[in-house]
Image 1 (tube, helix red, strand yellow):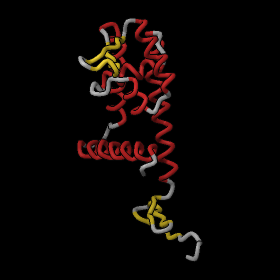
Image 2: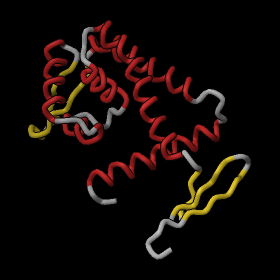
Image 3: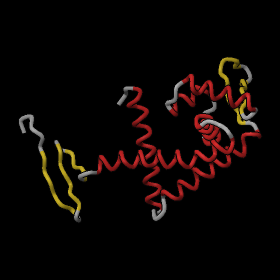
Image 4: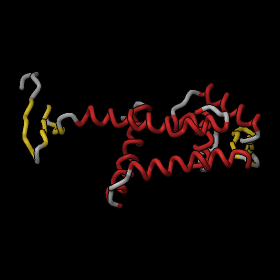
Length: 173
């Protein structure tokens, strides 16, 4: 002990489990976790690319359209910046482009001229539908062979991870 890394190994069902400073890890699981995140991002990027090409929009514009379609309670540029951790200037430029195309409209709520709310317009529907279809197919593909309980556990874990990420980015974790 005395400042040295405490390391213990056990073999469980042909898996090496390592204890490092009081915490047990499946050997290699940390690297595999990060590898899987990068693989998911790469696959998601590849599946969205034909949609952006087909409609002549940027990936940021597609992400904004899908964000607004999938999370209707969050409908301001500030919501997009906060929840997706994107830069304000990129979001602003993309929103402006979508407004010029007639795919997005800026609106105000009665009695509140301060907050600008964003609303999808009918011309955006085919691109949004294509994006949502790809998201749905990707989710089904990634959860192949999982039971309903495993899918529910995964959703729960991702919800918790998302909450922890937001807290960590704010410096509260």
